[in-house]
Every structure is written in structure tokens, then in C-alpha cells.
Length: 177
Image (tube, rainbow, N blue to C red; front, top):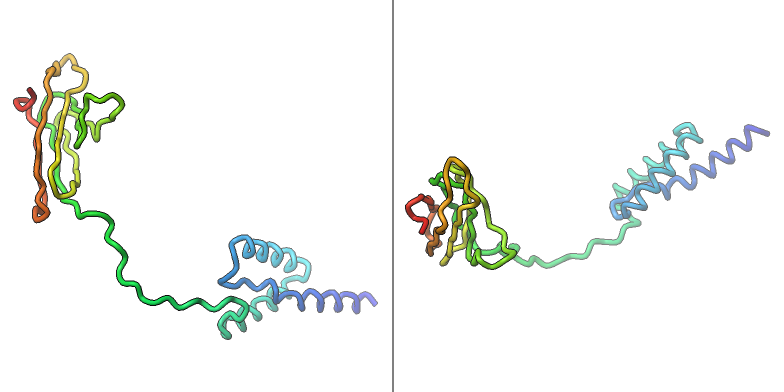
């Protein structure tokens, strides 16, 4: 009698195993639920259910995932749009004895505008600019005991040509006025 009950329970468990096959069209939540149910069912059936589930998954894969909706055909739409205007790479070099704040295309006197970048003495940074006219303003930060900062600022209008391969802008002490 116990053997018959166990066989009936096993048959019921195996007949419901096909619904636990993970399909490519399953959502993440559905997939996780199926894996959790398969884990506990595998413990109860001593792994026999897993063989049935994997067999069902193999059959569905060979048949083209019959329970998943057919993918819709999309006409070719061409290459994706460009990611903005092309940029020209360049180098900003701080050749001064001061730490400087560099601003690009903004007026640093307006309150609340942070600098684009801060360069320590002798430091250089890469910068990629879109072709066209750009205004670069640099202001020394608070003075140190070794090198007092001037009250002036560096200001320059530069033109980036799209045919240029790169540029280099060196900020020297004599250019701060």
C-alpha cells in the first residue's frame, strides 16, 4: 500500500514537472520561481523530477520553444545614430606654480558654477572638445606659502578644427593677467 501511494505521488509530481521547464521567454521572477520549485521538488523526489524537467526542456528547445510567442520580424533600420558630434582629443598642461581651476565656455564669476577641472602645478589632463569655438578661463586657487597666487586670470578663445587630430594648451604664469 505504501509503495502504491509513493508511485502515485511520484507520477503526479512528474506529470507536473513539464511546467517547471525554464524557457527563454520567462520573466526573471518566473524563472527564479521555477528554479526554487525545482529545487524542493528535486529533494522530495530524490532528483527524479529533474530528469523529467530537463527532458522536457530538451524537447521544447528542439521544437523551437513551442510555448513562447514567435518573435516579430523587424525590418532593417540602418545603423544606429551617431553618439553626438565628433570630438578632438587634447591636453591641458599647468606650467605654473599654482593650483588652477579651469572653466570651459562659462563665466567663472557667476556664483555656483564649479570648475570643469582643477590642475595642480605641473599636472596635465586630457580633454576632448567638439569642433568649434571655445572659451577657456583659468583662475588660480588660494595661495600657498611657496608660491603666492596672482589676482589675475587666464582667458583665451580657441578654435577647434574638425580636421585636427589633437591639440595642446599650456597654461604659463606669464599669461595670467
